[in-house]
Image 1: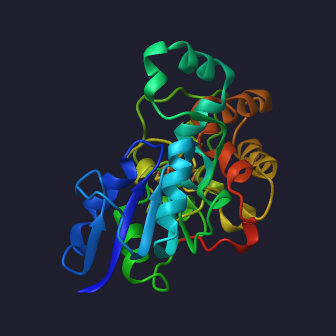
Image 2: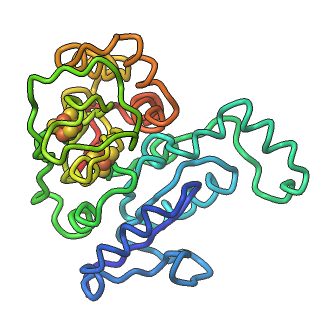
Length: 279
Ligand code: SF4
Ligand code: SF4
């Protein structure tokens, strides 16, 4: 049996773990020694690879991450929350914090930190697996074949929809109209950010008719720049392909639905963007 590995889940939703379980081909090829969602284990053993999902939201997260990383030869940051905050970052909002602290029955849960941290603010990952969640293919590549994994530059390249000369004049709400199965979603008025989002997911959302919300983070061309430049690039695509007012796009791009992915990557991942090893 090849080298063992473990999964440490910090504050997140367990979607990454479900995706790892969907990548079942690793079973029998690498030994899973610790993963509280499916394996009971009192203490984390020494492992070759520690996959960390979720963000550092509580004092308990901080303690567990430090302890687990000290027993691992390498740490892999898995998913949007571990890399850049994700849903756990909503706890940085004043209204959410006030709600949390007003719930007296919650006083026995771990203390929430004043500010959320990505995993790489505490330990140094050797690899990042972006996505919400990362796909099973990505987990397999991380466990067995990092060099062999090829991500297209952007989601657009993997999408397969055709760009046309149709210029919509207003944004279409999600699932409020029939979606043409072959035409680019931007040409249909949907806010799709696949044109500047890192490929490698094989575009499951856009193929199914749902706009890409950017969960894979910025394409390489933007990874070493600020999130504002990513915003600007998205806005330029819409100016080039549509007649939708620029203000409508700017507002929509910064809405909570997209901000969970688009905004947080550049602002929270702590390792310099040009030295991250990202699958
Ligand atoms: S913008 Fe979206 S729908 Fe259009 S080609 Fe790119 S990923 Fe596909
Ligand atoms: S299409 Fe976009 S939102 Fe969907 S998995 Fe890929 S990067 Fe994430």
